[in-house]
Image (cartoon, rainbow, N blue to C red; front, side):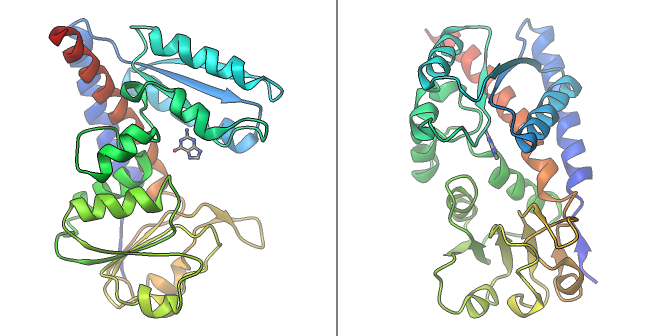
Length: 287
Ligand code: GUN
């Protein structure tokens, strides 16, 4: 039976570390503030946004909440982002995705000041990650690196296979694993012989969006399997992209869903907010 990687416990440790840092900053007169913007009332987005606000409250980060109606014009959102960019008392800005169909997500992301882009989605931060410069790293892949490190799983020199090539998970995950000196393969829906490719992995990260798609046949015995999926099965039960029952019998380590990667995303967002506040404070001193 595989080691179960407890993302809930690890994320709690990180949130407690962040809480301490936030308190120390606050004692030096440096409060940390995150502005969270939601457009429309997508129920899943509302759950995510509320979880983010709850984590802010726990860690002592001030959260400002903005709700625009589904019908809001893109200019209205861009104008709000512009105001938040200018505000010295706002360190991080997060626009919950997806946005309504009439909005251009890329244009919205590009409107966020890169120094406040705690999601790490702005092209400047993506570019920085790509060439190994400091910047904000997207929270889910950053959380996976923390999960591996804090579970004692060596990354350097390992064969890592990332299944999925999204801008939010797959691509930044591949870059982060590379930064940790892994040998990285990115597989996707058009990969020929996915079983053969994924079967080479010492560390397999799965973000396919397809419920329980990855069965034991895709996994090398002893591999660490990280499941980014948040799916519903035929009984509407929450599950991952990995068939946990089957794969936990062969893997060396595995993340459950829920309680694996999910809680880490929010913990890393809190860490990014602290990073933003620190960066902006040192920017003030240097200017
Ligand atoms: N929607 C799904 N995941 C994310 C995320 O990490 N950040 C934002 N802003 N929206 C999301």
